[in-house]
Image: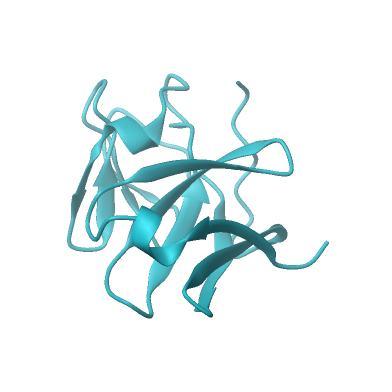
Length: 114
């Protein structure tokens, strides 16, 4: 699979986690500016809660259910209770749109069950 257009750039607010479905997979987008959007699997590895319900601080997203935080580049948990990473995906901005490739996972984290 290749990059898939998932949203208009202006539909993804800066600093606010945004949910999209990409080829049947839940993905959380986090926009930093007009050229940088990161994509992480939208399910916490601790208790399968949607990460887009959480909060962004610097380069981490915090799960709103129990407070686990994940690095948006590596998917690694930065705070308990989560101990397993979540997948991160290739995301790019072009022509005022956001594109994601869920087949190009940037880490080796297993996809959480949901």
